[in-house]
Amino acid sequence: MISNSHTVILVDSHPLTRAGLKYALESSGKYKVSHQTDDKREALSQALRTGADAAVIELSYADGLTGLDLIKEFGNLCPNTKILVCSLQDEQVFAERSIRAGANGYIMKNEPVDQFLVAMSTVIKGEVYLSSKMSRKLVYGILGKRTQGSSLPEECLTDREIQILQMIGEGAGTSSIAEKLHISAKTVETHRANIKHKFNLEDSAALISFAIKWRHSSEKSTEL
Image 1 (tube, helix red, strand yellow):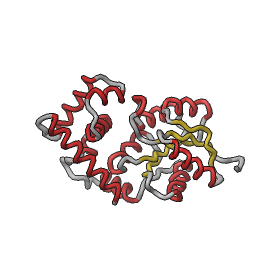
Image 2 (tube, helix red, strand yellow):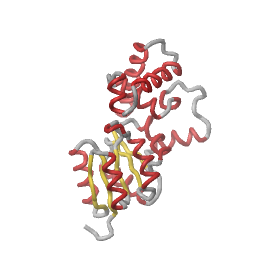
Image 3 (cartoon, one colour):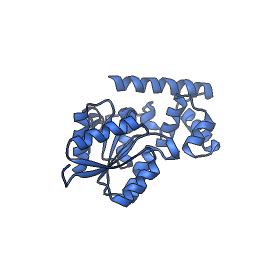
Image 4 (tube, one colour):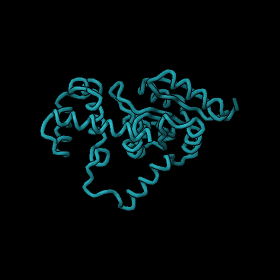
């Protein structure tokens, strides 16, 4: 291991994923994994203590602190730590939201290892990493080419509404969502009502059907 390697913290709920990322990073000779955990608050504490150069994080809902929340916390408390999101969540939905929250890059977990290392090198240099597909989408957005009055959830819902819609699509009820996100059931119901209003959904059954169909379409897009 070279002495001037960059220190990286890994934040992922799957031990095998963390082991694979650690091996890929350290085998390159450019990085040293200083800490790995599935606890987002622990990751933030370690970054504060060690001043890690970068953190690779997933997007999930564990411990009531979502990946997007964690990105914002890193920006507030550890502004010098570069953030690369490495996730199974559809980049068409979450990449732009992650960058807006303060991440430096977003890469899907189904990308090759070599591309992951390219992404890591890019964010370490202080640049933004996105797939070519996402880069084109953002450019079109900047040029005003997004569809006006879009009916796409990823373009008209808030971060929290997107999170809740996805969890509804995964089969979670109000109580389960409230527990996972550490918010009240009343707050979850308010978000559900907002989603129904935005898409003219008549009732909870229509909302569940809409969420399942949207989640299925998102998963199909990641396979293309």
